[in-house]
Length: 140
Image 1: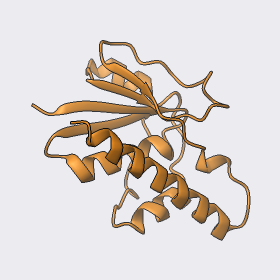
Image 2 (image 1 turned 90 degrees about the vertical axis):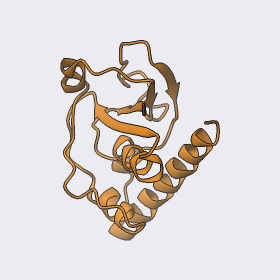
Image 3 (image 1 turned 135 degrees about the horizontal axis):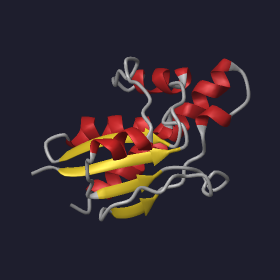
Image 4 (image 1 turned 120 degrees about the vertical axis):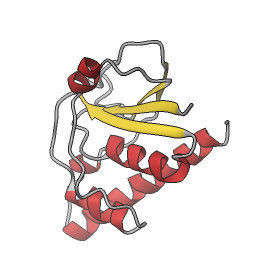
């Protein structure tokens, strides 16, 4: 039986989506990952590009809300919030018995700059998320 993980953030447009895609890519034999947000946002195009640069296509992904997941009745072994500390008070709580973890990452959607700078920032956050996931997986 696979370990079920949900990644939660504000809009499900960047960090939680990247974490979901990486976990399903790296360890789909042992884990099943999903993601959701407090409210549905729009996929961050720089995050989509940053993930494509490492061979993961998330261009067809849809953003989902925590309510949609709650209404499905699904339960998770791990509930991992990925909001930054500025958004922590808005970061949604997810009920259930799953172990709750918080991994704070800066929001690529909040970064201002040129398109090149926004992509570079998205790639930095992508790499931080992948490193955190690899550390998490090493404990299993």
